[in-house]
Length: 284
Image (cartoon, rainbow, N blue to C red):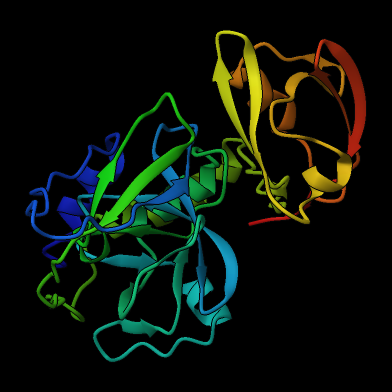
């Protein structure tokens, strides 16, 4: 029996809680924080997108109850990973969306019964490819603010001890049979998940939701936003046919927009309304 899988179940089936860590001593230079985009799944789990060995993106749940990175076997095969006899595989590159790169990362390549069951029934609303556990999470202080769309990762001077996997081989756990049972029952119950993965459109702009509306605070050079004519200080007034009053309106308007799709914008600039057309680039 895999001793740590019970802890993984608890962490996965409950909303993730923030990690706690000691602040760096005041005499040390503060580590540079990294903003990592996230979203909540239909099951209210924190999901981030990850590139493995330069391929992806893949959908990972942040799971403080899991001991390490755990990757679905099918994805491991696509990446050409060759786990050792205990199921461990090393990643040449492990990058979270937003630019966070976790060095010297390894993970277990196996089909967690939790993910297998959730994917079979489409419970999360998106296909899940794995979880990020303690071995990576413990290296960072993670700030959660569910009113914003990014998590703040701050590197810590801490290296978690190497983990050992117990219970490899032998009779399979009865818990793992739950995943197979859910996979078997899903079509009988008429549950057919739709996991149409599309790349997120890259705009190259930073926005701030203020009392006066959604304001452009930065436009990245050579980005789709700059090419469309967006400027710092513009107030977003309309996206497609949706009036924009706050950041939730922005998220709603762009949630179904894809990379390469032309988007009609209207901004207020110096009390004049300006209409623009933006074509998002291909993001993660």
